[in-house]
Length: 164
Image (cartoon, rainbow, N blue to C red; front, side, top):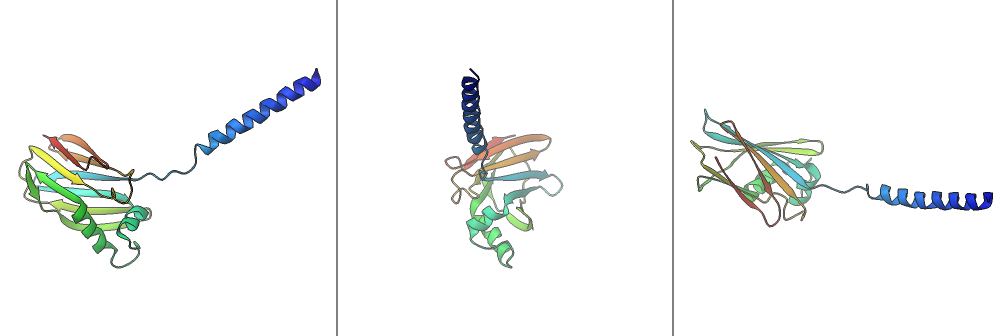
């Protein structure tokens, strides 16, 4: 009887150990690909100000340049200009790169679009990192005259539009 109980206990511990192993394996490292852009409307200057937060390694891989080199900011500027378009009330707006900052694992990118007097519709094409990372998700949060809107971009949904 004791031998039977010990056998069942060993079997229980063995099965528990295997289940615990598989459960712990489910928490293995998975890279998350995303960018976050905050858009603020500045009424006094009639400007849309954009602040984009990206993973340093991801943007570095996409533009194929080390973030610690002198040409990094110029390549980031070119990349953003080629992968982010803004349309206000159906008209394209020129975006002006105002700078970037590498802070450890994060790159902050700053740009703006001027001459925006009133927004009825805001359309954005955001393909940042989508070609480099198939599971990339780009979020854009917009603050305009007390209203908040959020856009989501991914492969197959590179363009989004909101109305105010």
